[in-house]
Amino acid sequence: MNESICVEHLNYAYPGVEDTPGVAVFTDLSLSIEAGSFVAILGSNGCGKSTLAKHFNSILLPCGGKVYVCGMDTSDDDLLIKIRRSVGMVFQNPDNQIVANVVEEDVAFGPENLGVASPEIRRRVDQALKQVGMYEFRKHAPHLLSGGQKQRIAIAGIIAMEPKCIVLDEPTAMLDPRGRREVMETVMELNRNKDITVVLITHHMDEAAMAQRVVVLHKGSVAADGTPEQVFSQVELLHRIGLAAPETVELCYELGQQGIPVPLDCLDIERCAQAIYDRMT
Image (cartoon, rainbow, N blue to C red; front, top):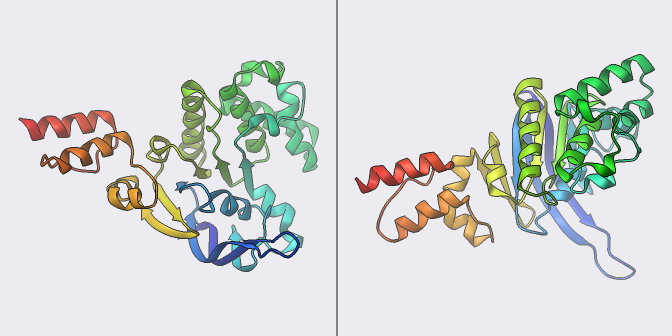
């Protein structure tokens, strides 16, 4: 297996303030993410999702164990630039990542800081904006765009740096349903057609169901790991750790509790409806 990210026995604790002890997040976490895959990471608040994401491009460094990105040790200072070229981060609030007054200038910011030549920057900016469906807005002011459009601009800025992996930390949390749909369509397109490894941290179960693999964290450990069908069919496990399955799976689970067994791997509405119809006829 060609690994994009490899976490080996990760130990991490946030330092305490003055005489207070630190807060342990991970004590022995191991996880690998295959190159070109689309992985969703779920978990309740405080389980370590964002902390883990920040280890993927050396924003945070392990207190123990190792994190490797494309075979590079994230704790090696000499590899910092290469690591951040390899893994791009998209955060929850796009306003925190937009730094210029014109869309195309904002997308060019990353490549410029990497020392990319001007003709190549022009090519990358145009290509990135086309990939996220925002090329026609290249001369616009970012602050006049919708939340979903801003987040797509933020993603374009990462794409222009040509990373091998994109980590998105709750990228749709501040967006309306239309904006969420726009961002998820963009993310899936990049993974499917550009072979970019995608790590999506989300609390939306319907978004996680779009991934090829779902990893559930609980108290700093992996509570479940598998395809969306495999993970979301473990409804009682999810409930115990404070999570819910997608609405379709929850419906099938409740029917089962009432003595009407329906398969729990029905993630989309059409499949769920068909399964219920087949059971009732």
